[in-house]
Length: 112
Length: 114
Image (cartoon, rainbow over all chains, first blue to last red; front, side, top):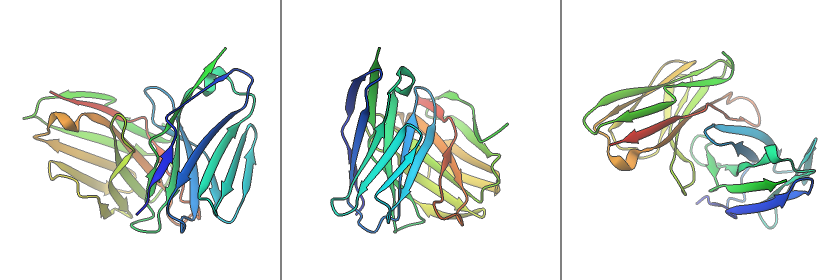
């Protein structure tokens, strides 16, 4: 079955880089996604990567995919206090109606 | 209005009440989803509607009843809920014939069952 795991918490200082890690189990996943959730809000899609790619960069965000190890990471460069939120990794399962399987989320705290 | 909207944003109800959650998407998408987000648990997919037909029902108790009258609107009708049903209920939409089928979420309805 599908399972997505993330560490629960990450604390960084403003201006540093943040790296949020995720492991997944479904080797047939075609797309993997990163979402951000701020307090009292829904999930905001940040970026996604297709499974035949190793890396995708979008401004301050860099996604790295190691398909062999089923490991996905999100790097945020020059982290700002406004980046404090919960970050969810999700894989698109090949079972069911292309459903997304989410991790439990990593809470990122950015201190000044 | 843009994106995905949900009403109400907060709802408190007793176990014998009947209420409905509403979701509307303004993105021209053809699929809509209901998720349940509880503390310290992964997001749980409840229902999926594609082209107004229910295509997924993840063993959700019958006290939750979805309705999708058209591709822009999705409802979740609630009756005789339990306190453990208290959670954030999130609606999402997507265009399923796009390669990445990205899902866009609404802000959620925070439900408290007393």
